[in-house]
Amino acid sequence: MSEITREEVQHLAGLARIALTDDEVTSLTTELSAIVDAIATVREIAGDDVPATSHPVPLTNVLRADVVGDTLAHEQTFAGAPSHDGERFRVSAILGEEQ
Amino acid sequence: MSGLRAEPADLTRLAGHELAGLLASGEVSSVEATQAHLDRIAAVDGELHAFLHVNAGALDAARAIDERRAAGEQLHELAGAPIAIKDVLCTIGMPSTSGSRILEGWVPPYDATVVARVKAAGLVALGKTNMDEFAMGSSTEHSAYGPTRNPWDPERIPGGSGGGSAAAVAAFEAPFALGSDTGGSIRQPAAVTGTVGVKPTYGGVSRYGAIALASSLDQVGPVTRTVLDSALIHDVIGGHDPHDSTSLDREWPSFAAAAREGAASGSLQGVRVGIVKELDAEGTADDVQARFRETVDVLTAAGAEVVEVSCPSFAYSVAAYYLILPAEASSNLARFDSVRFGLRVEGPGQTVEDVMAATREAGFGAEVKRRIILGTYALSAGYYDAYYGSAQKVRTLIQRDFDAAFEQADLLISPAAPTTAFKLGEKLDDPLAMYVNDITTIPANLAGIPGMGLPMGLGDDGMPVGLQLLAPMFEDERLYRAGAAIEALLADRWGGILTTKAPALTEATR
Image (tube, rainbow over all chains, first blue to last red; front, side, top):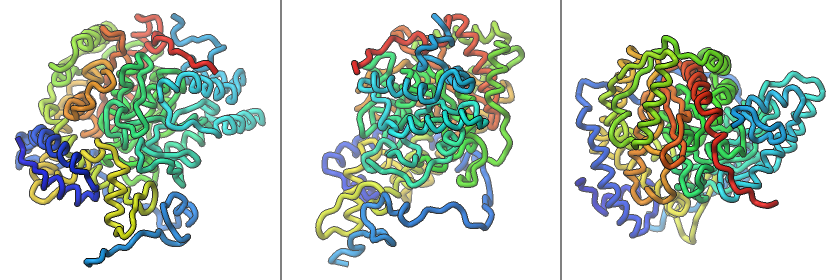
């Protein structure tokens, strides 16, 4: 059984910016341990002599012509934004009290 | 059994290419064809829930096509035919949620390239189809908006993630649909609904405007009731797109021509067909195995040379997939940050980071959280080489297995799913059981090769059983040529294609 702890799940949730509830942390701790046990088998056949594949069809230097493309107008860009002032996305404070 | 022919009165029972023929000759208007499908949706979708959104502008779009045709304009051969669009694809004027609460009501400012291409060909968008949230699932039960039901038995799942598109075509709500396939989300729903679906060669169809799950695995493709109909849609949506840096810049043959030739010949003379030993193993249900054996006999009788091939690394494909997919998904889904689009959940005094965490907690479902956390784990310092790095090496080994197999065979075949459709709720509490269900379809995504799911009969429970065809990279044409031949051979045995045997659905009174 893998060694995934509650604290580890809470740390990962922090990195992933998801405010999990205690119940979610509990169930994810159990589920992730089982899933990681199953997927850790990839280590059995991944020898040092095997190159990694990141992409099924490798392409390099994919460039387009240096001309203005079809771009979105401001109003289109902001149409789905939760909050904006017409020129910028509006968010709450970047820094908290203690920072 | 009337086979591919249907009563002219019921336009929804026609195959897509037959309906397109009536539209092109002027015997049927696009408004009539579109209205017939909207009526069918109104009658049966209350029970099935294949659609998340029905296009209020569909009849206007249909009328515009009729006017252009009346004015003598030369239109595409599919112009005026209706099509359903998986909700993973961005559509101007229709919400695009990818089955998630975090995008509820979001209307994109641009069309996905595949959507723009079907519109340019004159197809009429009927609406957006249901799916597992962000395409994470094999049953459509992970949709934030409730599951889709299988038209063959509403107590059962329609497959996933594209259960909505598969159910829509199986239930005659649409002749054509678009899907996306990251680990089998087109082929597995096709298998369990008795329909046809194709995952093209990676890069063969643009991903621009497809809400990303795992960018090195995702591929958009057609979902239909016949092989020729899939080929016709593939011809429309395929080809190079400068908006997608992974799009292949190459010439593709006409897949519709290949399908027509395959169906006309009804022969597999000289085709070397490989049975992948590892995909035809324990875990495959007896009735699925029985249909597979019968299908192999049909292929042999039609002249195919059947050989067994071995792909030993496939045993590790599910494990590799459930590392690579969550890793890519965890970074792709970082874009849902409450700033530029979608949901925002905020309280007084919160920093932007608190708002992001609260938004993602409220907006993502359990399966999405599970995979994001798993992907974050797989990519974290100390584990990266052991997990993600090893999974990428397995990917190389799977590609080598396919290369070796395709030296012995022109096409590979296997059951498209190990069982017929399971019951709603049956695997919902056991994520691993759901993951293992994808064993047959995942290797193609890891290697980037094309694959097709098509019907090969009914199981002991009366539910559809699917066959999978796999071809080498860039050889999508072989799927259509052989797939259409197999479809014709089986239809001869059955007295019609499989969907004509589906039980009638109760139509709601209107």
